[in-house]
Image (cartoon, rainbow, N blue to C red):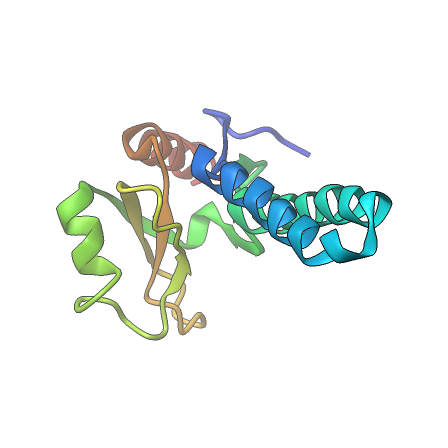
Length: 154
């Protein structure tokens, strides 16, 4: 497997508040089990916190990376040859593209806790997806990496 010209990898980690909420879910489970004694209370605290943390981690931590000649964003994998222009979106423009400007056919790797994004055109005529909307904390860096990978594999 050939590595991309400018390797890029980003994990969209969940915000700190989600971990506090996970703990509070555990406390809620503990309070529900309080009438049954100390051991069920501790089991509810540990089990509820662990279950909520697994959910927060699974949803809140997708990866965006360039591997070989492909862009992998969450569960989507698309060759860089099928990608067009990458447009950096600031917070205001990103909000517009995930609300009233959004196309229902687009692929959205959307995380509301990340204000900036990258919009990448899909140029493959066989693919009905018009563009990829990728929430990212470093949109300029990702756009540069995609452009370098496209040039390297052109």
